[in-house]
Length: 298
Image (cartoon, rainbow, N blue to C red; front, side):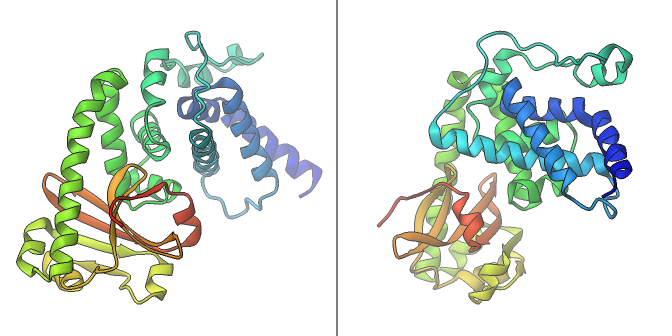
């Protein structure tokens, strides 16, 4: 990259900096961490050939979101809550007054109460909610950022939305726990029906349009890339899953096949009402490492 090309790229990045700060701040709840995330986005941009990037703003938003997701997961592992103890204010820069459109992006500055509620969400829930509900990104674009299918990303945002509407963690948690308990019952019923070869019970648990998707690593183990429809999915699982165990995956009901003391394949479920609408088979080592597993039956 020539000096002139670098200067042009830097100038274009500056026009998007305030928007990227807003995205990062709503995800992280910390000005300093938001600045770090934006700076990391610039470093990645400066090392990337952007000649084939059609939408630089969208590309940068995706980069910032992924950086924030990594930071949230790292923070969760340390159980840190870096929300500032004072009411958040707008970000400002020395030339904000000459860019009123940048100030408009931040005009709906997040209040401390909302940040407190957001801090109770799982990292993927928080990212999905912020990107969709606050910045209107479609779930098809959010899905690869959080490593889920569009349907699963939609459910992440939906769960987060219920918590946010509750106003605070104390109000929202009981309803969430009830929903989570019911989803666990459905997954455990699915496991029992699968192990027992109860085809009819499987059909009753599955949405007519249920889909099973497998990542590339799972396909290498023999899974089909995609299976659609209750009958086909029931046939796939009937009499199988004998080695699978009930587990929580990022706090949600799921199944896992573990060997050598660590998960090898995860079964992540999307449940709407009392029906399973999607099952995702995850065997990719990096994707598994990014999830939090608790095996419930041993």
